[in-house]
Picture 1 (spheres, one colour):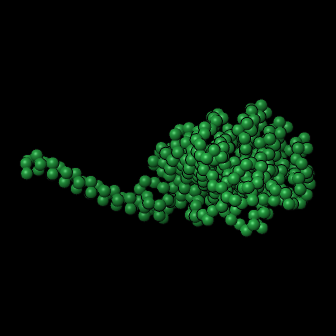
Picture 2 (cartoon, rainbow, N blue to C red):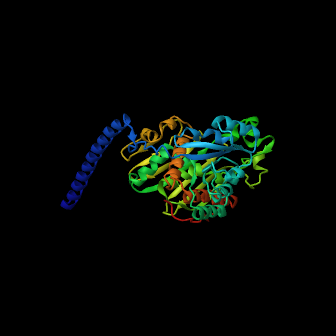
Picture 3 (cartoon, rainbow, N blue to C red):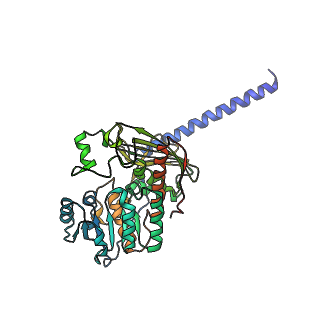
Length: 416
């Protein structure tokens, strides 16, 4: 063996020994960190409840006596339910009783002239939300609506135009954006804790269409008539999975290719939307070039889940799944560390801290909307976010109908 060969061999051996020794040290350090992490929780930055001045009150109308019953606006110390409305007598009665409100309407438009109403919380038929919110704001009232914010690109723009022309507060009560873990995710992103976000994934899995037909029809029919949920497209209801990603990153989805799974089930053979799909998977590319996978599956044996995951080079976050709490993961860990979300609960008025609903989203939404209206600031999920979230699902449904053709998603302007 030549001297040169000896030099190469010794150099390679020394380097290999160094790397192995370094790896051992790194693994030992990582093991120690994992051991410590296993007994700890990652806490969100401390928040404190800052009361709104007691003299300020938001007088709100609750419209929709089905889902609307799950939102106790009357518990907020700065909010009063001054009107309720529903087209059906039984639901009107339930609203009246729950909110102890005798100012009862059938069709809700007449209450827009009521001087005792400052704002309207909308829980009506999904496809009507955009047009109804536009009517609400044009009547001089603030508006908050649950999913979907809009089911057409034209309505996305009309909402934006109406907010500009009326200067009223509009908030999208997308529950996926208001889980405590989703709020924490936004804070982490603002603080740069993810490093470079390179991939995101969202999921809204729900076994609703695996229920016995008698149970299923209770949610799809009312008094023998088909409701708006009969065959509703998954893309139009994808905000639960898309929302928390766009809310955290403010990075809109720019293009989509979607694949739907057809099923020969009554709602998907005959519906006004032309939707043959029971499950839809959407693959997006964001404006910043990030890939994202969104699953909206309604006939599934998988566990139900509403949430999103953010993957970064320095940290990743996973919302609650399969019985596990929300958690964050760092490169040196082999499993997530649970998130301590207590500070976000303690930032709510005491009256709302034990209110349930969509993983703790309902009380967060109630407090955020009341605060935004009374303090005259933009809400956490404003009209531009609503348009970005909704348009992604609208175009996604179009892509599925075109068998996965990649389609561009319009840009409705910058998000706060």
